Length: 633
Image (tube, rainbow, N blue to C red; front, side):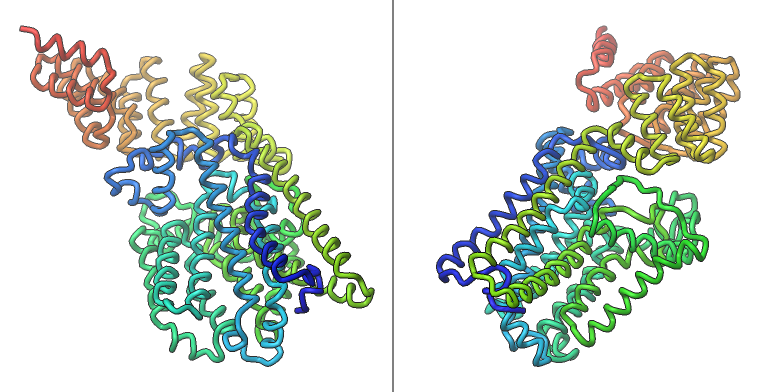
């Protein structure tokens, strides 16, 4: 590292330099706002529908037991707070996401600045590294600013910020950075125990966001050894309590059942991650990650094209693994070499590989590649580029005899130009999130023959009642992937909307053949059989739907109506009682139960069921009128 006269040209007066240093966080804030201002009206897309729009867990903030019972309780708690304040108004969710990202950027700025200004007695013991730490201290704020600024506005971050449910990635990233930052602050603070307690608390909160933070204790230990300690024994001797606390935070993964889900999937459950996922073997997944890691690096250097859903192919041939394997193995070898010869640089490689390790190892995940997984690893790539550019410019300025003012203009201009280009790219990428049809058409344009994207386009069109066009896209989806049960089911729904019951029945039947646990398809096929007069077949389908998903209300209601028309009132009531027991908040089932009880003359029980209906739906006029009629003598 060089003196401030190097890249930044900080030969300015100390008071002037201090003033600019105080402004650096404000510039980061302004840049993030500029990058994400056009994201605030972006729609719910992809998993947002399941985890936010249709999530019952986030709709009840108090008591907190339900919202904190999921795999990611801290994320769900923030979503529940959003819902409590403004319901499903998408802008509030975006404001929180951008705020989380901004806090992460400021934390990264603070972490790098403090790392570059560590006093000699806390830095790496090698003499050369100690000298580097001393000379780096003066331009440190500006180098830290450049890294944090570029990281914050990089278009690759849009998936972690603008794709709302990926708040779990950015919030975990914030807690990851805070964990390390608090350890660094505690190393030379008077009240170090408070900082260390904050580090452990941050790590535990991160575990409640996403399991990727499982690597934090090891990353902290390596940082401690490289930047804060003179030997491997020193971190454990001076900060043993910190490491006990960080390791204890892994218990959160047990309490939230994340560890059990990854290592052991219960029979009958649908796996998307972990060794219970059978569509790809651990060895195939690990081989595929060579290409994935190479793609991550490419996107970090040239973030175009970006895609919500890459549909990344599984690497099953030597040709698919060879070239990316050479790149990744070579970079890993360089990291190992640097850890010994240039530990500070080696730490950047460790940061990249370790944080990606949980999603780029042998643990299978349905989707091998997602951009949001680069949220924290991108910091290492940006830091390496910024530090390399700093060294190159310092050498060029030294050879050319440039004046301090020229150095400042060139350095500021370069950082500013890169930032503006990246903000423009981020703005452009945010526009793809304007609505889900725009996003999925973008995916198909970039990844043709993508069944999930074709299916989602069809779903969006069906919601708009553009049925004929929706059918075309569903047909493309089932041609691309004939085993996609959801596409067959929605194709059946589209046929039903057009009154083509026979075609609908064919698609529903294909859906349940592929996935017998699809309760919606079983129930809708039962509805088709009722209209066709095949009552016994309909009853069988309704019972299969109930077995597939006991909390899905429609088959209870539909089966009860069929039984009532056949004069089997007691059986119908038993079915409805089974339904309200499975889902006590299903107002429709309480109302149907009340009507059935009234029909059979069981008026006191009917009145009770009407009252339960009104507790759940106070505005249900039919239930109130019926209850009032029962009260009249």
